[in-house]
Length: 119
Image (cartoon, rainbow, N blue to C red; front, side):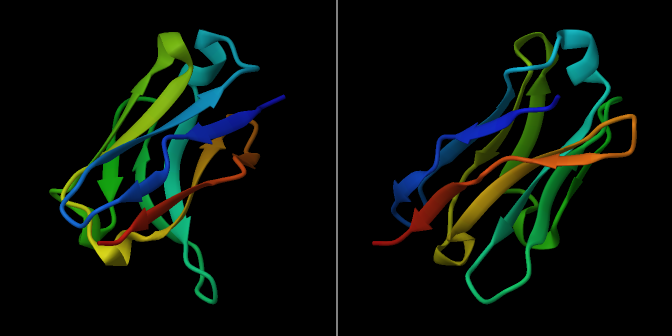
């Protein structure tokens, strides 16, 4: 069973940085390394949008508004995925969710962590 837990959210000023983590406490390194994973975010009243993704073999995609500011990476030995967010903007304020697409075709989601960018 996949159990994703996000951490690292908080309040930061515009231009600041945060690093979000997503850990699967239930997976072995082998199983975790087979996931395609990513981060999505949601603002109340708006649909959830994909922010960044990373495949099991390291292919990475970013939503246009975060290119050059966000970096997604993973440490399979720690069964953890990260997103380093730099030069944050008020428009990045949202609840951030991590997800994992397992090889059985099922998608799993964490419960989210809140990022607030405000002066």
